[in-house]
Amino acid sequence: MVTEDSRAGRGARRALSGAGGLVLTPVALGLLAWGGLRQQMLVQATLSTQRDVFGIGLLVGGGLLLLAVGLLGALSATGPILGGLVWGVAPGVTAAVVPEWGFRLARYLPQNDVTYGVTSWLFIGGLLGTGFLLIGAGLASRLARRRR
Image (cartoon, rainbow, N blue to C red; front, side, top):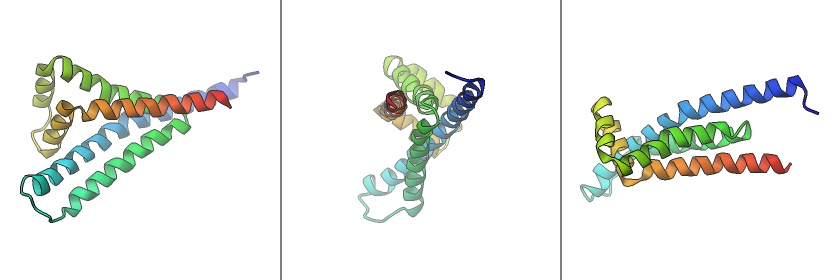
C-alpha cells in the first residue's frame, strides 16, 4: 500500500533529481568541451607534449559532474533522463538533421572558447552520445529500482 508520505517523498526525489540533471548537465558539458578544446589546441594542433593542467582539471571536473548526474539516478531516473534528453539528444539530433539550427544556436551564445568547444562537440556527435549515455543511466536505475 502506498501512503501519502511515500508519494510526497517520491515527488521530492524526482524534483531534486530533475533539477540537478537540468542544471549540472550543461555545466559538465561546458567544462568537458572547454577542457577538450584546450587540450586539442595545445597537444593536437601544435604536436606538443606539454600538459595543460587547467585543461586537464576542466576535463576531470566535467567528468565528475556527469558522474554526479548519473548518480542522481539513485534518487530518481528523472535527472539523468532529463539532462541527457534536453542537453544531449535534442540538440544533437537537431544539429544532425538541420545543421543550420546548430549554427544559429551558437550565434546566441557568448563567443568564447566554451562556445567553440560545445559547438565542436555538437557537430561531431559528442553531445548526442553523452545524452544517450545519461538516458541509459537513468533507465538502468529505473529498471534496477523496479526489480527490488
